[in-house]
Amino acid sequence: MTTGLPSQTQVTELLGAEFARAGFEIEEVVIDSRARPPRIMVIADGDTALDLDAVAALSRSASDLLDGLDDVQDDYVLEVSSPGVDRPLTTEKHFRRARGRKVELDMTDGSRLTGRVGETRGDTVALVVRPGRGPNQKWELREIPLTGIIKAVVQVEFSPPPEAELELATGAIESHARRMEAGE
Image (spheres, rainbow, N blue to C red):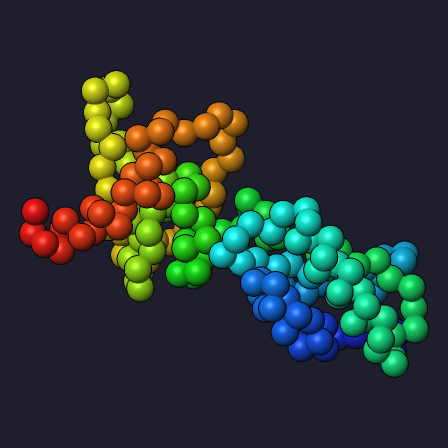
């Protein structure tokens, strides 16, 4: 049975290079031929945020490319979006792209950590944590092996993080690593 829609593989192959030129990669393609009109959803992610301008530009170019296919005969709705905050972080690139975001980690040893994602290097991620609950507790940076993480989910925040925590996660990590390498 033909649906008049391209396959997931066709969409990925057709749009992949265009998305890559814009600095994004296609994470997932979902085609719902039962919806009326049918729906093609393209989930993209990149090292920079997929803002509304980027979504609009990618949607226009994706629509032009898809409309140019000979076998696409049905009307369809095209949606281009980012993975959303509920997507678990499962790869090194997911952690790299979540730098500065607050996450909750379930660890292989049964513990749970909440912290802010810092730099990801190879198979480890730096996590900014506060070891105690008191106001005098300082933020500290922990190196977490990715193999020690069972599940990682970005936490929704309704207020800005403390400046010291954010600075440690986003700006001071490189200088911290250099000091650690120098044995300071």
